[in-house]
Length: 185
Image (cartoon, rainbow, N blue to C red):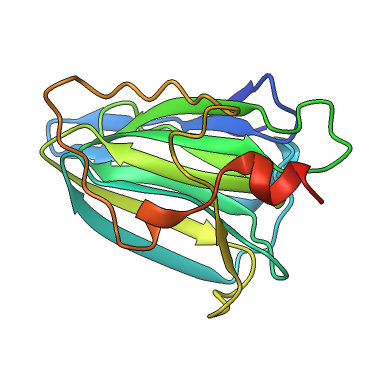
């Protein structure tokens, strides 16, 4: 394998990857994605689209998923710092309804692979953050699903300081609880 540190997570399928950074007096260089290395790390996915978002401190996006066109995602931060979360929505999985979170920042250069079958979201901890993600399927309008970020059954431990005011989209304010969507069917 190439110069890629791979951390398997407690939830099967989730992977944290850290590329090797080459730095000198000019700055640095790193390969953010190299298909062979990622395949050897267990991330054997064809990505079809790259996305980038910019957000300010306190923005919480999520927890999102696509219903009929699920996506594998490879996410990273190029500016700032976020706490990134994935929730296992795979019925039959021994970790169904469990979550995993990781701090992603421009300093640690970590990337987080979130496979199909997970809800995904993040909160911005720095004053500003730019967030990039590769996806394996195209966004399909009308195919969105979501779970409330503070769902009591999932109980994500967001590292949100008491004095941080959260900022949501109108849609993210009204996602239903996990139990209503996944346990009552």
